[in-house]
Amino acid sequence: MTPPQLSSEHPLHSAPVVAQVERSGFVESVHHGVVAVTAADGGLELSIGPVGVPIFPRSSNKPLQALAMVRNGLDLPDHLLALACASHNGEELHLAGVREILATAGLLEDDLQNTPDRPLHEPDRERWIAEGLPARSIAQNCSGKHAAMLATCVLNDWDTVTYRDPQHPLQVAMADTLAELSGETVAATGVDGCGAPVMAISTAGLAKAFGRLAAAGEETPEGRVARAVRQHPEYLGGTGRDVTDLIRAVPGLIAKDGAEAVYAIGLADGRGLALKITDGNQRARTVVARAALQMMGVTEDLTALDAKAVLGHGEPVGTISAVGVGDVGPGA
Image (cartoon, rainbow, N blue to C red; front, side, top):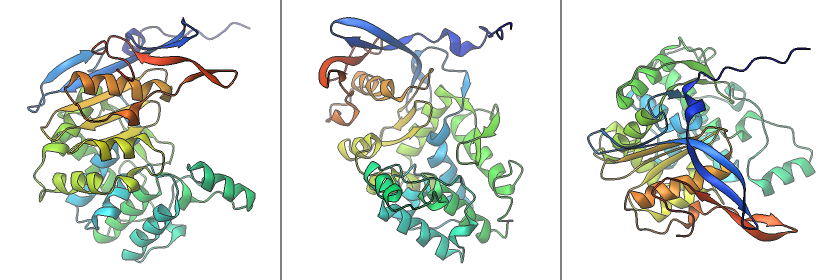
């Protein structure tokens, strides 16, 4: 049987090495990636790899999607607006918050259409398994976004059954908002892990969008989303999540992690940072983000982005470090 021929023409194939894994003084693996830093005016300050090539930002798009909902009338308390931006752990505060969003619109848990799952948070996940609890949409990490999408539909008399359709007015509004903040046309639309549409923009466009969110005036729709994320990062991720701890550590910073090793960050001065590890491995995402933030002059405690140790026989024998991103590695 002839093996399939793989194309080498996609620009992401040319992404440079941005991280390496060292075991016992020996380089064992490398990760390629794309890193973009934008200035307050949206101009590109740092470009590593093909930053203009569209990617699926995955859940890093969520604050931008929440902005579209706020612009279309969604008016939630800050903690629930943060939950609308979340890839949450499925802890009890998250589940209670999703129920609260649904209740404001007269909706039920059964109205959620995101993929059923058990909580991300390991203690809660183990408890669900031990108790024989089935996977449920409310426990899946995107349920806050889906509840908010449904609530926005109710407010606008839009159909709640077809809200995941890319042609639905809600999804069209999200695409328009994403295009506006990134300064780009949405290049492609796919199906995200939760079943909602995911829209492609470039790494540079994602950085620009997050810089704009982070610098917005507090009473603007953009500023309301940024304030919610800053004030309630525990709803954005949860216990033990680097995105939650990073937002707590750096005043004015907003951030959102995404599947397939995407990270988007905005600073209060309007600068943005976005990166993607092109093999999708999350272990390199935080160390590259840390190196880039240090290069940008962020001096606050960034231990939330520390790499996990490389283990041998249960003991640390190596590390994961950034390569070519300000020549700064973890713990420097």
